[in-house]
Image (cartoon, rainbow, N blue to C red):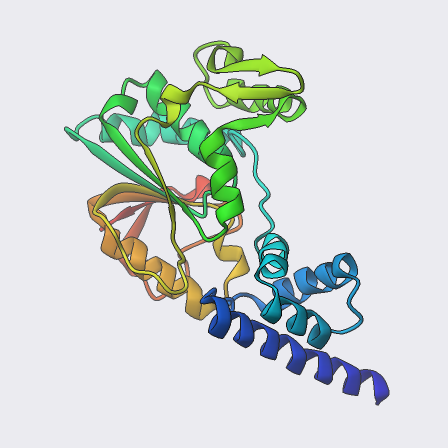
Length: 276
């Protein structure tokens, strides 16, 4: 009985924290998956040395710097270059030939985190002769992650691991051609981001900003509840041009969504869809 009472109390505290964050900072986590938010806040409690969620709420409400720290836990940027290489190979083989039919291309990478997906896409487009006529919108709700993405500097140890992904994704050159090694870091060629616009955008609260030919939103929707997933799919559907492409993460699907019938699978096992 006492345990369930404690669980109920912490659930109430969690809802109050999420509501307080929305009211004070306009970051909306209210329709994120409850289990995911609970896990992340539990981790944050240990790092902030707070005994209760209410104590954490008091701290972040009165200290914007503490909120920015908490945001790093709530958004947990986890990514890698050419993640799921077969996915990028499918884009190269199945999507790129169709993109080549457009005189100019706009791509939206939603939830770009620290930029690994952005640079992967830019490298693929360069090798296929498309980067110069492409504008990439790279968006995220975490300003710290966006700043890191803009810099294009990654741990050299990680980049060595990404090399195998790049090769399996159909890479046509030596991966080292795209960066300069300095100390323990890899600094990626700034020409890769010349046509990239990094911007703060929330799938929970913001609207569409451009017509696009391709949207990549991978491993973001798994953290949303069904209502927020459908909101995101609505934004993507509105943003995509006729017969535009939507690519999702390996554990994400349009099946059972309100927009499922408005897309068709192009490469279903790689979660690549085309707008009907």
